[in-house]
Image (cartoon, rainbow, N blue to C red; front, side):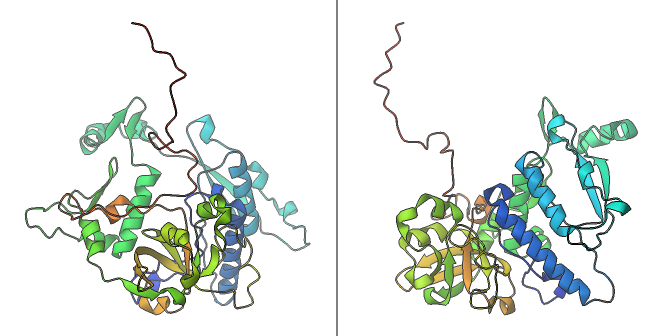
Length: 378
């Protein structure tokens, strides 16, 4: 709820409440996803009650609208109880879905608890693609073709940047301190004049590894092991039952496996609410992301196991970091642009991958014997 926390004293950049889900899809833990949404809604209602003028609320849901995804969407709508729902229909049958069951007419605005509910309208609009407005813009066709000359082409038309490309763009901008700061960064080499940019067809373009060099030159926060509690990524919890304590474990008591899973990873910087009266803190105890107030994201740049210190990179305002007592792991991959410093770097960056991978990928699975297959005769 609100903007993201970055190095700025301007209150416009501070969010009122947030939780770290630790994944890019609600499919990984639907119950926690719905519970976090419900808790944020309660905090919004509490904040709204303190204001003389109602605060408008816009909820952006994900694009998973089929099968179980539709059930999650319905649960979120039920928890938020919006007055208006904007439904964006795709151009194919797979991207179309029915929301008529969520319309609430005046005669239906009484909830199961006997309390009144607001009337709800569903507004259906068509999603935009390159051909949607072609009939209204034939006069500018040549100009559009010139602007899109760098786009990749396929049998179905122009290929735009994917959701993953946009996510990489947002994460990189976040960790360097914002979009404006990222676009103003320049290479240390005078001959390398190309800045960081985002192309609608190619995604983030950082030919000179400016983002990686910028993050590598940042001064990290040094956090002693005993100062924080650790929550391993949910994938690690699923695959290693014999590891012992991996959820809400003191930093100085964490196993090497837990430390390895967090090294070089994006983590949620959270406050510890277990010591207070927080009935939702143990909602999914031992199985996934805890429901804890999150002030922002950080990168565990490295771990000094001899001195027992975490080195953290984060754009969060230092005043907000004073209350951080937990590092919550997730399955959000650190973009390569954040760590790769080009061919002039002295070493390749340390990388991590999700422990919840179900598909090992090409060349990553164990070798299998082919002795049973006979040699073909030529």
